[in-house]
Amino acid sequence: MRTAALISTDEALKLINEENAIVFDATIDKVNQKMDNSKMELLPNSLFLDIEGAFSDHGSPFPHTMISAQQFTKEAQKLGVNQDSTLVIYDRWGVYSSPRAWWMFRYMGLEKVYVLNGGLPAWKAAGLPIEDQYSEPQATGNFKAKPNYEWFISKEELVERLGDDDISITDARSSGRFNGTAPEPREGLKSGHIPGSKNLPFDQVLDGTTYQDKEELERLFEGKIDASKQNIFTCGSGISAAIIALAAYELGNDYVTIYDGSWAEWGSSSI
View 1 (cartoon, rainbow, N blue to C red):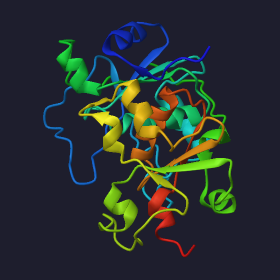
View 2 (cartoon, helix red, strand yellow):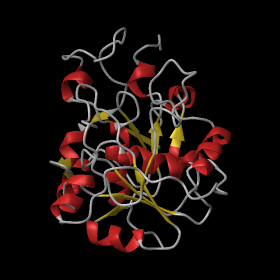
View 3 (cartoon, helix red, strand yellow):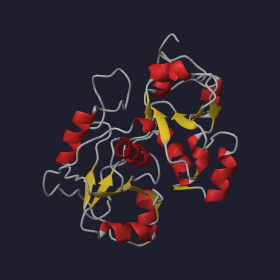
C-alpha cells in the first residue's frame, strides 16, 4: 500500500523507535545563506548525510550531481543502511535539502524513506529532546542500490523527449530566473528556461518552514502536473526540484522524475 513520505513529529517519534530506523540530518547550506554550526541542535541519534560531500559526484562540473549506484551503495552501507531500513530524514532549515535526500534513496531503490515536515524547527516547537552532536553508525549496512529510472532523467533523454505529449516539466526556480529577468547565481549560465516547462517557485509550496496543506498544493500544481504523464522537475542544481517533487508525490503522483543536471547543466550547454 502506498504511504505518504511527509511525516509529522508524532509520526517521526513512532518511526524513530522502530528497530530498523535510521535518523539522518541532510542539511546543506543555501545558495546565499550558511547554516550556523557553532551550536549544533539535532534530533536524537542523528547521523549526518553529507549530500555535498560523499553523496555528490565531484568529477562532474555541475553541483550536487548524483553519484553512481556503486558509489551510492558504498556510502549508504558506511552509514549502516540495510535493505530493510526505515529512514527518517530532516534538515535544520525546516524543509530545504531533506527532500533531495529522500529522492536520492527512493531513486536508488529504498522504499521506507520519510521526510520530517518542518524539520528541526518543528521538532523544537513540539518540545522534543535535542542533542548537540552526531551519532556514529553501529555497523556496516547491507543496502544495495537498484536505480529506478522512473525517478531520474538525463539531459540527453530530456532533449530527445522535448515536445512529447507524455511529459510535463516543472521548474522550481524563481519566476525571475525562469523568465530570464533575474541573473543566475552561477557564472556563465544563460538565462531562461527549458522549452515547454512551467514555473512553480519552490518557496510557494512551503508555508515558512513546512509544506503548504494539501488543498493549497493542489491549487499550486493545477495545470502543471498530470498523473497520466511523466512529471519531470528541475531547478538550478537539483536541490529545490526535489522540494516540489516531494509535494507532487504527496498529491498522489507515484513517480516524480528529477532532471539531475537542472539549469546548471542546461544553461551551460549550447542546446
